[in-house]
Every structure is written in C-alpha cells, then in structure tokens.
Length: 349
Image (tube, rainbow, N blue to C red; front, side, top):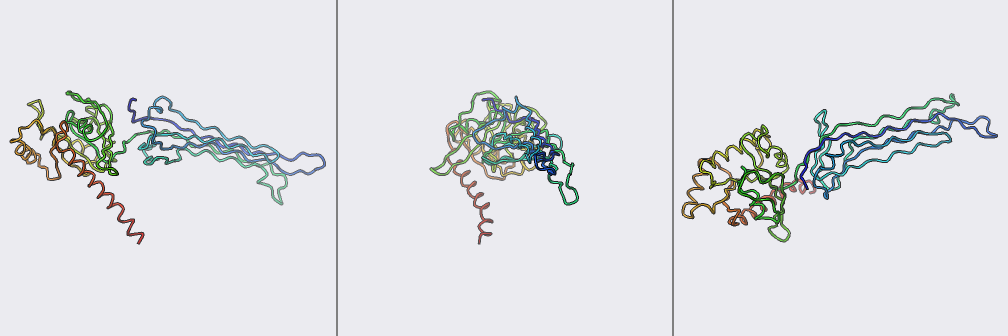
C-alpha cells in the first residue's frame, strides 16, 4: 500500500434541533398547559486512534465529514432525537492541527485514544421549560445551536524508538534488514527508500524495540530538496537517532566528513529540538576497508568530523557489529525508561 502521511479534511458537526412551543389540546382538559419538547443534540465528530490502520490514504479521497442535525422538539412532551456521532479512525501517531490557526487539536499517540474534533450543537428548549406561576402559557422556545466546523490538517508521525538518518545509499535500509524482519528495497542507486519503513529489533525473548528508516537526506533538505525533508517529522518521536555514514563510498569525489556535517546541519535547520535529540554515530560499510587500515580510517574520520559522542563501526551488509549495536540501543532505551519511571516511584512513596 502506498504510504500516505498527510491529508486535509473538513469536519462539520450537526446543528441542534429547535425547541417546540406547543400546548395540550385534550378533551375535558380546558386549560391544558405547555407541552413543547426540547430539540435533539447535533452529532459530534471524534477521531479514534487505531493500530490496525497504517496510512491516511482514506482521507485523501474523502475530505468532508458532516454529522446529522438533531431533530426538532414536538408537542406532547416529545423531545427531538439526538443525531449519531461520527468516529473517524486514524493511524496511531496522527497529529491533528487546525489548518487555519495552526493549533494542535489532538495527538493520537495510543491505540484506542478518542478525541473530540467538532462538538455537535445543543438542542433548543421547548416552552414547557418557561412555565411559571406568573406565566402559565409561555410561547417562548429557543433554537438549536450550530455545531462546530473546522478545517483540519492530518500528519502521520511514525511511532518508533529509534530513527535512522543519513545520506542516500548510507546503508540505512540494509541495516534495518540486517537487524529486523523488515524488508525495505535495497539497490545500488540513491533514493531507493521512498517511504518510511518500520522494523522490530528483538534482542532477547522479551526485549525489543522499533526502528524507523526514512528516505535519505541531501544538502538543502530543510529547504525542500530531495525526498527526506517530507519525512523528517517522523524522527521527532524517536528517543534515539542513529546517524549512518558511508565510510567507503564508491564515488571517489564523495567526502564522508562533508556528508556527515551536511546531515547535522540539515537537522539543525529543520528543527532545533530534533537537532538536540540523543544521536549516535554509526560508521557503516567497514567491510570495504582493508582490515589493517580500518582503525586508522575510522580514527581519522572521527577526528576530522569532530565527533565526541558515542559511535559504532559496523557492516550492515555482513552483519559485523550490528548485534553489539542492537544490544547497546536496547540498554540505552531501558535506562531511559527507568529514568522516566523513577519520579512516579518517588511520588508513590
């Protein structure tokens, strides 16, 4: 299925039904009082997160959602029927934004999460509510209130623990194939990845994490060059970023240090918070280096790049170093989880 991660829709909640102004007219009851019923509530529109849905493709073709109006009230104390609500099922990870104001209205981060998008209008009051000791025959009633209307922008952000970034052909897809059961396309030309791919990395029976591969970035991505800029948002949910670098490109004119710096700069330009996320350097394709020359080439690259953080040297093609990297990632994620749970434990005491 084609990956669709953006859509624009309009939602119209139903209008409430009008109240009724009516009086009892029955034989042998010469002074029947008011009996006008209330109008029904208009239908509301909700968004529901569903883990069985993977894309927003349905909302590309059906863009307008309109709930029914509530029924009007009637005589004999008959209340109007409320309209049914509409529930729009969306992928987990969908962010819903008001297209006109830019306000984030919902972030569907958990399966089954339900959020009100547009509230249906309340029904009007019938004249039976206006009866009093001084007003025995009220003719007042109120009209139903209009429902809310919004133009919404839907954006799907992939939910993953770890995100891969790097230049096209850095070996991201090969790496995710090596450590998980995901099978993204792999070829010897750039931009083979056209949509995000998710893979589950299982390091033990009950220890696993989710990794996301997005299309490769190029210089100028933050301004819209290439394909990867459309998917940078998916990295915002990741707890750790892996920056893959091709240490031995086939093209002699390519400079791994320059390419690595370009990726870091694109992150900074796109989103400062994304730039500040924990990031590990993964030097890939060491199988192309002579064994006696590997350590020197890696050390030279680290020095020229000026990297002071954690780094790993792997070969995604042969699997060398991938297992150690997977275990290190798992340990890191578990330590983050323990840190997140620590305040809760202190409060419980």
